[in-house]
Image 1: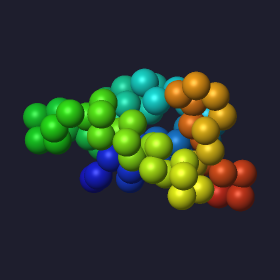
Image 2: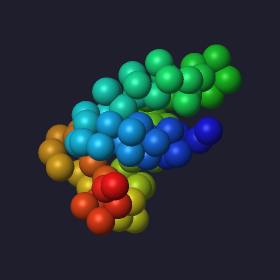
Image 3: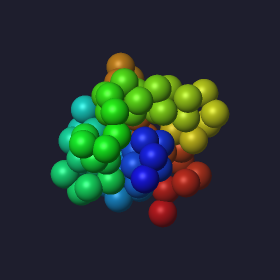
Image 4: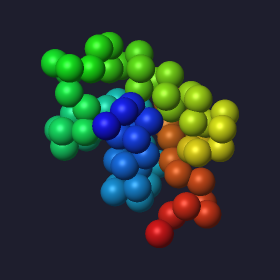
Length: 74
């Protein structure tokens, strides 16, 4: 699973806005990201979230806090 897919999956599962550190922690704990096979998880996850915010896939609700756009909530 790539960084963006992992972040979107965590945000969908939690169904609430989360700080990127929580997204990273949950993605690692749930096995969506693997620190042994995926390099520089912090940098790549932040890059993926920033890109997703620019593309409208996520909404930045505060410093480091991301959520799914309202229309994508179940």
